[in-house]
Length: 503
Image (tube, rainbow, N blue to C red; front, side):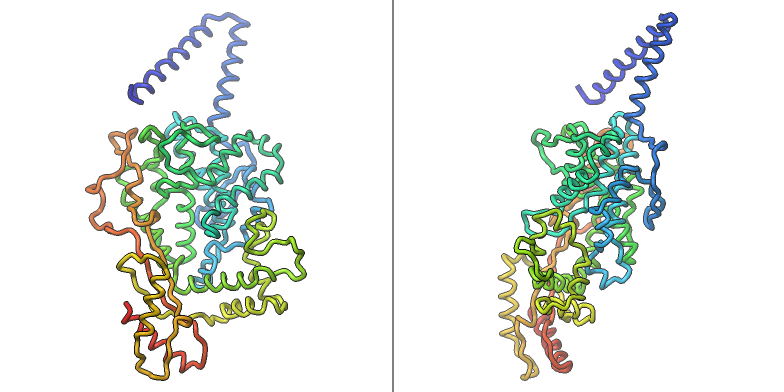
């Protein structure tokens, strides 16, 4: 039996039940009729209370956001934002060292998180209003918004490969729940199961053909797992916010229209599971989203100077790892070990650089000198960049190739001596979100005539101007030497010639 047939039969069954209830009411006499009416009214009010997303009676707090305008947040979300764990995000630059390249990029993770919560609510409400049969409840709505609010409590850095920032975000959220007291959540209708659901949303659901592995919600609500952190095709409100916000502060044009995509979002059953799908005519807009991601990485996130500044920051932190705090107790964790403790991790913010710069400790001199060079703009000089035309087996192979090129190169000035120590090589990976795959092949679309049926888009429905390759590797070389200005200029001139020959 098709899903449409099942829905029709269910509708007819419910309709007959309502008609029977009406006949029973009409046949009743006072005072039975009055009692029956009160019972029906109470039941309907319970249904409305559970499934309506009207929070008009709540004391909503208004945030004036430069990207989304006036944002109304539920009191429970406001209580979360008022915790130390969340306020910490005010002291974390959204784009880290990129701020030192793009002066306007001074926005913080705090406002980004509020923006994600807002867009998560917008998407859930749109689905709820357009498809009431999805049975989205107030609890669902609040849980998705809270997940959006708390998704970046952990820094999005690949510290070790086995540790992801979502894991720390979950631990930080646990800390918030503990500090708020469970009664605060219960006051707003949330249970222990809802807390599990929020943590699952933060981590994001991965594509799976196996049995439904999640406990927060059953498989009927699988589409809710694609809103905050979508591991299946990368389309989520986290990206919608930071694309708009980062482009605004960087001064980079954003061709992706998330508001339009939001209006054409719909839940369809694909391969036996409910997914968020989009109108087929929005395929180019969806591609613009992935292209915007690539553009932001190419021009800002992986900027040639921004990357070297981030590299110097990392070097300074490694040198300060154990000696940041004078007379530290033996059991006090190093900076690099802070991920082992929520309490220690929550104290790590961008202010750590100010602590190092203002310190007079001789143990921090090397670290302080590196940060001082960043402040004074005494950075390694960019020599050149090229695209890899073939896949390298390892970074070691590339370094050996560059070393061989330097040894083989004969400088025009016999007094110039080039070394790999002064000319390090870096590799930058750029893609559209799914390595070398076309991400749009993993997005489901529906048509105007068949709004309940969705599938991946056909090649002939896409623009012929789309690229054939969706990732690239850039090789960059910098000059990290020091010496008299004229000597440095000669070395850089020879290094550029050597790099061009190597390319």
